[in-house]
Length: 190
Image (cartoon, rainbow, N blue to C red; front, top):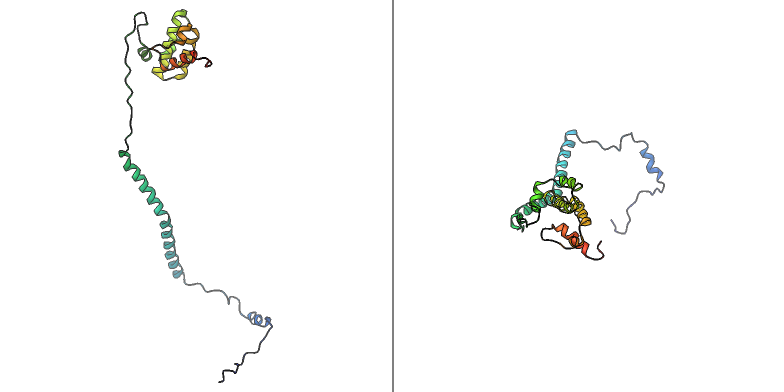
């Protein structure tokens, strides 16, 4: 054979319809892919499902482990953190001064209902109203922790009180009454 000799080629047919002509003669279903047996399909599905589930677990498991480790680390470090707490001193009862009421503000606050004191304010003489309003305000503030009730009593007290009582804080005043008196004495704070 001579390398220069070209092999004989099939006659060229430029008409593509000649290729399709043979397809029309094929029976229906010739291009359908036959299904593998049912047992084989179930085995492939089971194996594939295991792989997909394992990959899914492989994605969220590290995150869950990190979250669990962070939580455990927080629990383990809690005893190491020292929280400084300040103990509030217990209230000290002060002996009443001569000429004052027989009970201190704290003892009145813990034993008397402020609503009863307020009820007696309306019938009391003007001189006693100031004392009763202070007792009611102290009872609201110290025994019940009711700031609104204490403010109501203290404001009435400051309206009825003479000027020297309004502006001069006393040692037996609560912090709220002392702040209100300071506000009365400061110009522009009314």
